[in-house]
Amino acid sequence: MKFEKNTFKKRLSSMLAVDFRRAFTSPLYYLMVGISLVIPILILVMVTMMDGSVSVNPQTGEETIMKGFDTVWQIIGSAGGAGAMSMDITSMCNINMMYFAVAVFVCIFISDDFRSGYAKNLFTVRSKKDDYIISKMAISFVAGASMLIAFFIGSMIGGKVAGLSFDLGSVSAANVVMSMLSKIFLVSIFAAIFVMAAVIAKQKLWLSILLSLGIGMLFFTMVPIITPLDAGIVNVILCLVGGAIFSVGIGIGSYHILRKTNIV
Image 1 (cartoon, rainbow, N blue to C red):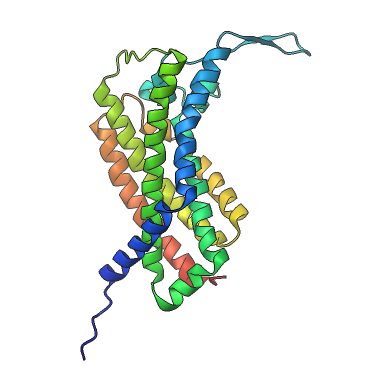
Image 2: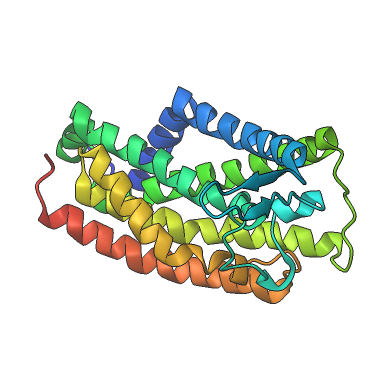
């Protein structure tokens, strides 16, 4: 009798198949993608309705005029990363918010493994910890990319409903495509960070979300600079290569954390 060797490739393929099936049959995935689609529609319509409205500070009497979006592309990004440190609504309420939505998905998805006892059973009878980390990072990347694409589609719908201009100005359609590709490739870094936070917290969902949001905020201001609306091929390559390098490094760290800590 000849026993077939359980190689790393076979283990990983099996783990990926299980995780992708769990993710794509889970209401959580479709809920998060659906929210990503609806959010830009609500933002563009509501901000456009409030454009030009005046609010008065009752203590100082200072007037503040609400400024909305000039074009639909402002919710995707700004040319040259302008406004990266700005706190106005058009700079804060844009597609970059979706990186934090990815954190919520990753933390809930992984935390459920440890709360239900699935992870303990998995490591006992089926998979290795390195397979688990790689699979979770892959799922997180796909989920994050789906949310960004859904947000982009929602932005186009919201812009049409709100009657906003689709004029690209000095930016070309190719720039917008490369900006989106850059943002998608950048998901790999955030996904790796969120997986590490979830592995540290395990069944403590609240802790994993706090860690993910806290660490993610440190990198958040870099997103509009690295992935501007007028992005070029250099931005795409930078995000692709940087994402791969950081993912491997953070993934190795997550593996060692999972290997040296208790499963429960």
